Every structure is written in C-alpha cells, then in structure tokens.
Image (cartoon, rainbow, N blue to C red; front, side):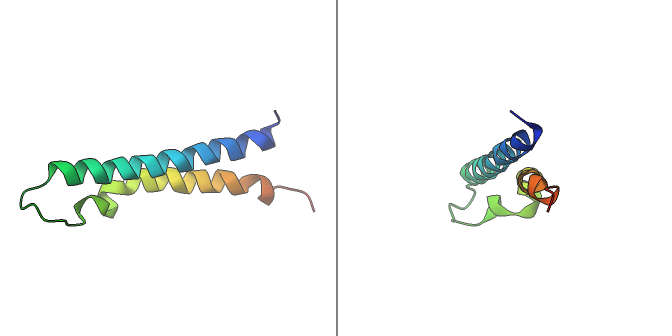
Amino acid sequence: MTSTAILPLIGALLVIAGLVYSAFQAIWVGRFNREKRSFGMRGFGLKANWPGLALIAVGAILLLAPSASAPG
C-alpha cells in the first residue's frame, strides 16, 4: 500500500473515532447528569466535545491531503 493510500485510511479512522467519541460523550454526560430529569443539551457543548471535534478536523485534513498534493 502506498503512502497516498494510507493517509485517507487514517483520516477516515480518525473521523469515525471522533464521531464515536462525541456520541459517547453526549450519552454518558447526559446519562449521569440527570439532576432535574430534564432533556437538556448538556453533553453537546464545545467544552465537552473538543477532543472529538479535533479528531474529526485532523481526519478531514488527512482525507484531503492526497488530493491537495496530487500533480495536475
């Protein structure tokens, strides 16, 4: 496998990992913070999800890197 084929694969894995991290963060924070039994958006803030968003951003950059360096 060439290096141009490995970068998008790693990027796709990072995007999926970021989505899974953000989903689990929202589920677990929402599940354990039921003080009033209200359905708030507590687990969906930027403060709670910045690692997942960073993984998604790095994965997107790696997905686009081979097309940016392609000749022509």
